Amino acid sequence: MFGIVILGFIVALAATYIPGFGLKQLWWIFNTIAACVVVPTVLSLYWDRLDARGVFFGVLVSFVVGVPLFVYGNIIDNSIWIVGASLFIILVSTLFCLFMPKRKI
Image 1: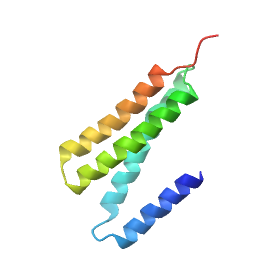
Image 2 (image 1 turned 45 degrees about the vertical axis):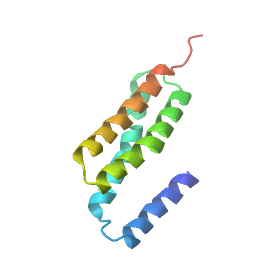
Image 3 (image 1 turned 60 degrees about the vertical axis):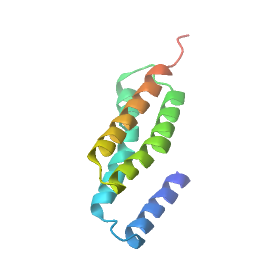
Image 4 (image 1 turned 135 degrees about the vertical axis):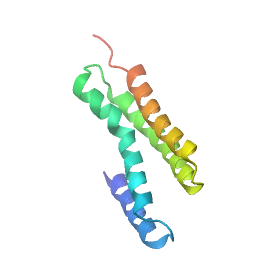
């Protein structure tokens, strides 16, 4: 939780001090972060074998790799990079959740 507060503070400072950083960029960054957790959230509601390890590593990898790709795509204003990064984020979080299920006892 502390890390999320720090990241939110950094984004707020970026919106204030970076020229050209407006609501559009803020909107897309927060939507990308939401994309990191959408699949684990839905799977937690409907799939009994969802494991915390898969959720953790899926969100971690999609956030650490996918969000910078998404930001880069927005910096160069390339729609292919933006859509590809978003699909990568959703795919990675899904694959980690599906390939690291709870073990049957």
